[in-house]
Amino acid sequence: MSVLLYSPLQIKNLTLKNRIVISPMCQYSSVDGFASDWHLVHLGSRASGGAGLIIQEATAVSPEARISPDDMGIWKDEHIEKLASINEFIISQNSVPGIQLAHAGRKASCSSPWNGHKKLDATQGGWETVAPSAIRFQDADTLPLALDKAGIDKVIADFKAATKRAVKAGFQVMEIHAAHGYLLHSFLSPLSNKRTDDYGGSFDNRIRLTLEVVEAVKSEWPKDLPLFVRISASDWAEGGWDIEESVLLSKTLKDKGVDLIDVSSGALVPYQKIPVEQGYQVPFAEKIKKASGIMTGAVGLITDATQAEEILLMGKADLILFGRESLRNPNLGLTFAADLDVEVQWPKQYERAKK
Image 1 (cartoon, helix red, strand yellow):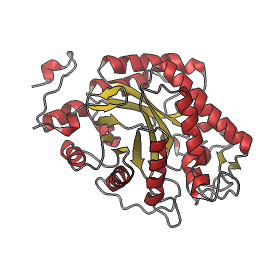
Image 2 (spheres, rainbow, N blue to C red):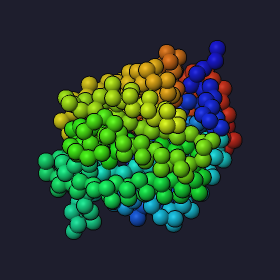
Image 3 (cartoon, rainbow, N blue to C red):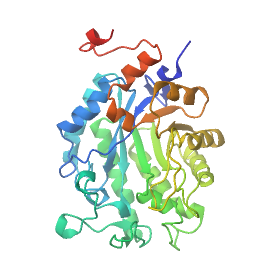
Image 4 (spheres, one colour):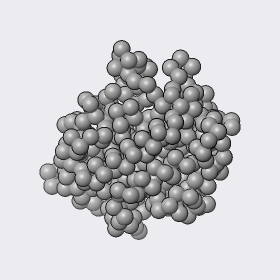
């Protein structure tokens, strides 16, 4: 019997060898946005560990787009060389390198988690944050700057320029980050977007920036390579962005040429109420897939091979993204195969440990 988790998936002209994806996970280990040997080992080990697609962490399109001063970036050409080297290794392991382009918006200018994840002011290496409206994320935060049209145009141009660099670096899958309370998500949600211009108010206005970023990215991204968008399907808060709007957005993105929706949720407001349990976000991926006809990726407390296989068999998603579980086990693609009694190729350097 064939195992869906280990069946290939073709998206445009690219074929993934299996449905196991390493979710983009911030490492907070960059200086001035540069990738390092940590990133080579982190990303490379998961490629040699058998995953079909490795998506690099949220990568800032400008210095002010970073969550922290330690975030990865792709806002200057000098960033390309190390990224290209990492991607060459990933490809040599019969895996696919992807990148998630991001702008942190009002959640930017924070210290790394092990330094308290605290807002940084200018004396601490921080910077002014931007948002659709001058609304804080946390009550103690400094007020973000509401973007004017020139600021919005810069964001779009930054995504476009970052995409051009991503192509030069050899990435083969592009993901736009429009989730987790970061800039694009904050434009989508009426809880954080109180604008009265063309970028606020109605659903069509609130999705405008995301669509403009998609068009800018598409103008530089090869037409034969996959384009993903990560969204938060629900704010888990009254009056916020919800699954019905997510379905409508996904239909629109499909019409605009997006290939897959990476379906997460939450992180827009600190008072969200999330019933966290195994696979708690999978129903969102299922609804979007079935209601819009677009491919989806399922994420969130998916921790074993059987669970992942069942999600695929029941038609709830097309890809399974692993975050924390892949931090615990970089060899998911190899160990899950053994769990499901599937024969897969191991790196020749490791073959003597296969049985």
